[in-house]
Length: 340
Image 1 (cartoon, one colour):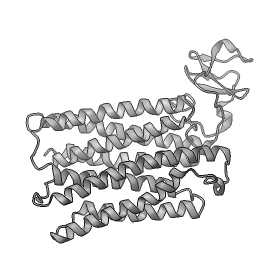
Image 2 (cartoon, rainbow, N blue to C red; image 1 turned 90 degrees about the vertical axis):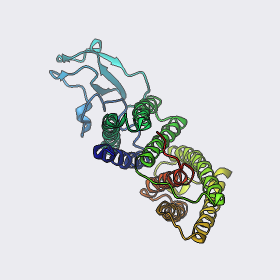
Image 3 (cartoon, one colour; image 1 turned 30 degrees about the vertical axis):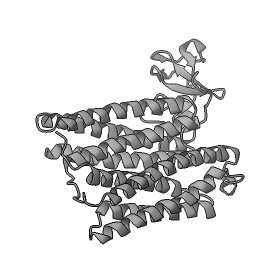
Image 4 (cartoon, rainbow, N blue to C red; image 1 turned 60 degrees about the vertical axis):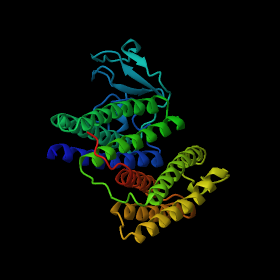
């Protein structure tokens, strides 16, 4: 197998995990509109660090699409020009996609770092695809899946634009996150086809049924988590800086999500028991169990300690570990014949 291909495949996986964690940090800190335009940030490649950088200035050269804040609204430069002594509205267009016009350097740079990691991960996925071309004769499926990963990354970037343009509509954020899980699934499948050998337990279909059922439960739990997260977003807007009120009047789905984690844990402990009978404990199963225990722990911290800021990104990151480790294990168990 091409070493460069494997390197960029593993790098892509690590970066996508990092993007998910960064995205969760953006969400919990309320930094999603730290950059109100896309793909630049206030019209800059490197965003501003001070509010006065976004104020109109006389005798100043402005680049096309550069953004200023004027009278609590955004204005976008129509062309490259140098300003005169007085503001001329003919040089500017109002920003019409939303009416958000605040600047918070903390939020701006959190969102910028999130976008930067996303861009680097896109480059890594594209590099993986380029090196996959050398494998066309040996394993065409890797080239096809790598190309699908590139297309998915482009679509994910466009979804990011939609999220910003909509001023963070909750359902668009959820779609954006689900797409990240789909990209992870594609990369895990590529990793399996590239390197991982199947576990020969054809005589024990019971194990396959349990892990498949457990994976199905995880998908339900992730969906419930997105619904709970949307509720928390609403509470964050209604009670800013009052974390203790975010679970006020929590809907039934929150309590179902909380209790459902115990069912998932029990299912995977049963899976561990079945593997122990045949004296095989896959490393991916150890990851699943460890991540589940930590996932429950971070959930307890959020509920009883009013959402410590680091717990939500960790909670989501652990969910991605569980999702990918279960998928990885299913591939090892179910797909026994190498795809040409």
